[in-house]
Image 1 (cartoon, one colour):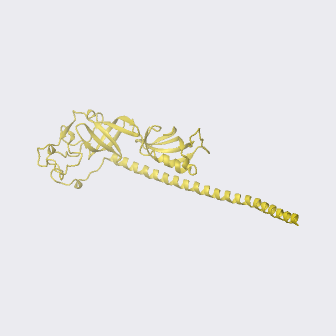
Image 2: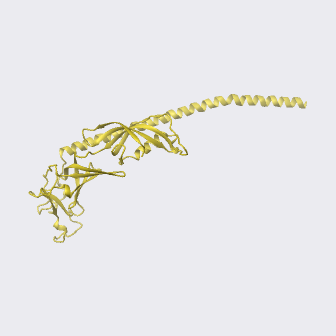
Length: 307
């Protein structure tokens, strides 16, 4: 990854999404020497959905590309051109100690698996789940003691409740609210191009309004289709989803503007090349005319000498 310098940043509505204005030192391959903007965009696209240490987050979009140098440097025996650019990056940067919402997609005695914003993974280890409030309720239907006994047509087969679920000790209600759980970010693990979020329920009170899916009166166990049961995320999660959609539209508009700018640069370059070709043709014409005169003069002199 190229080295960078962060010049400014702005958090979007206090959430984990941040706009970062940064400078990057680009190493442009020689195949893009005639189309540098295209080459820069290709390198920036390679950062998308990857953790970038220079901005301490996962890059989601880029916009406002500017060249900070009129020419690049070619150093030693490397054919690459090196120069600085300025670009605005939309970054997903969760902070330790803040509160996030995640959709439960896996439950086991060891942890709860979550999906954040439909894109990022997170997990809550069992040691961060208070045992005085919650207990893992195993699903006996798949232990061989029930008639379903691993039936692939059973409603629970292939879901996150295959082995059981975490429930309240006192009420036997499922953890979370309509499959969405609120948790505190306890740890962030940054390895290679990945950012792993570890959550905790020790300090966050979890809402439990959804009936447990494991008791006998469960709609799933009674054969009721899960599609008949309407689910709605908490109001906060809906607001977060709207904010993400808004940022995606903003990023798409910025990308369209960047493409239009690139096309304009290409057009100007073509016009400049045409002008240079025209000037070259005008400069060559007098030279060719002078050579023709010399040739004719030499022929006359030869004829005169022969006479």
